[in-house]
Length: 307
Image (cartoon, rainbow, N blue to C red; front, side):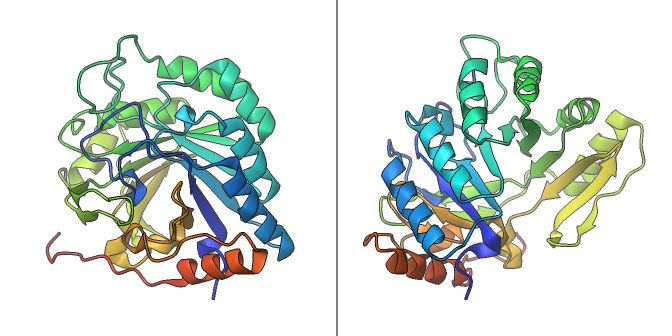
């Protein structure tokens, strides 16, 4: 029984976000103003240390992590029990001075959620940004601090004809890019439960592939990956990985992304298992037992046929 799913942890530091994208599943949480505390992360750190365990990677996620007032402290704590610390962010709130602090505390990679190169609407959130979002400047600032930068893009009708531009931007700048299949949220989570999510691709994979090849002047084909099989299709161009990611629950592989821990103290390897296991007693043996149990649970997502 694994203490951590795939030796990874996803610290969901807040349910709050500065944007409101129509497809957001919020990692299975309720959409509310909750924040994980440094004390909660210290408990996890202590338990792993007591068992001489480390995570291969900790991914800091949300919501939008940059809204967390104690983000630097949390990243510093994560760095004590992880070989690599990554943060997933829409980047709109990122500032060079803040990124410098986070890099000093142990952040190694910034994974930017960008669905468009439109500088006032990089994601399909209502309205437009008050000030232009200069992704090229943000990438340059992050790299100057020694941070790795990759892109995450959710494929929807909003950006179906911008996928080539995004791919070209990624390859030109030497950044991997992951295209994510659209997942429809039928019901959002509550404080004590997860919402219902179903894979509902709005754009065929073949269209994604055509956009890539038209933009790059290539004839590459997206093929199954060794670790994820048909759930992740990928190709390489000029040393840059381009990947299309399907809803992992449909393949029983959701555990590969790691053990999630959210601000409510829930621990889950699959968003559909949220609410089954929760941290309480801070004793290392109890914490390890919760991590063990939650990380080993099978996926119980309901996948409709033909989805």
